[in-house]
Length: 92
Image 1 (spheres, one colour):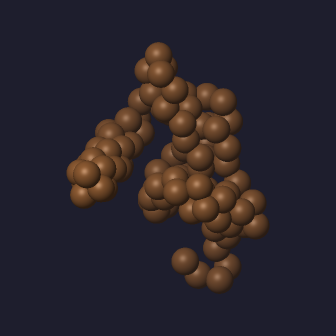
Image 2: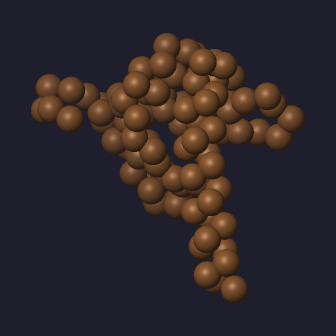
């Protein structure tokens, strides 16, 4: 990322009973840096995808992720689930 580009972040949650993840927060610049730092402290997985941030950033906080982003998110969520499963198995 160049110095002229502001960092951007989108926070998602996939509540039970909802068809797709919900946009919980979004920010840029210092707000995005804070969101990322807090997610790291909490052990929340972070994925970097500028195109996906562009797409999700067009939507309002509290809305379901648009269907056009589902495939990209499914790849990310599959990776996260696999990683968590590996950690769980190695802890046993």
